[in-house]
Image 1 (cartoon, each protein chain N blue to C red):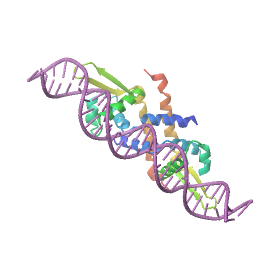
Image 2: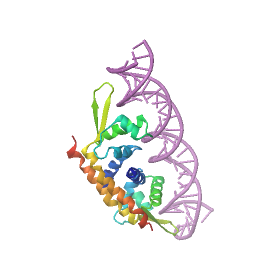
Image 3: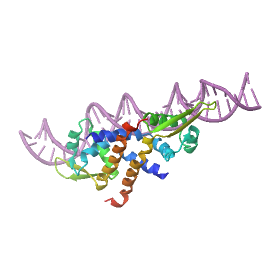
Image 4: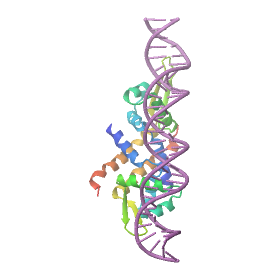
Amino acid sequence: MSAASGVENVLRILEGRWKLVILFHLFGGKVLRFSDLERAIPAISQKMLIQQLRQMEGDGIVRRIVHHQVPPKVEYCLTDWGQALCPALDALLKWAALREPAET
Amino acid sequence: MSAASGVENVLRILEGRWKLVILFHLFGGKVLRFSDLERAIPAISQKMLIQQLRQMEGDGIVRRIVHHQVPPKVEYCLTDWGQALCPALDALLKWAALREPAET
DNA sequence: CCTCAACCTTACCTTCTGGTAAGTACCTTA
DNA sequence: TAAGGTACTTACCAGAAGGTAAGGTTGAGG
């Protein structure tokens, strides 16, 4: 059952109050600046935004693009691997959709 | 993007240090007693085992079968919905497997 | 009467997560 | 010289998650 630990790893990556919210804003190849994300997710604090972005960058889901300009400009987008998450999340969604009818 | 909250809900259900470990022990229609699970997962404490089982029962993933005997006997197995999780977890696993080759 | 087995509950404590608020660095503009 | 905009960073705190240890219920067996 190393599958268990594999899935646990994946959950560990996706866990975090804001990861999925950020992901969904980035799906579809969108490229957003830090401040765009702040505006898109008003409830998030800068600390959390940066923290979750950094973690996802470290996990290889998100790519960080720094433009060395005077008013700093940093953009974020998904890596190919990050984009590939879509179908897997869909599978989870489909599973969740099964719930209502089949409840004993 | 209510998909985001949908997936968040699912993660909320699967989250928890021991849920997946227990799930994988129950996959395949297995029916296990409390003490079987304790033995199968030596690192878990009784408190955690019961807590995670109860949460999964509440979420409709696990079914609890009580036999009113003198040395109590309680069995746990997956509901149909719980079994249906398998393919979704497989999708996550497949996604995780994509990682190595495509790392830039 | 005492103990044991199996399942669960409770109290308490530590660690982790997320939240707020303030501060930093840099150059541009007034 | 002072203010401002962008992208962070830091210090501190509260609440939740998880861990340990002990207790409690029930009837059979000694």
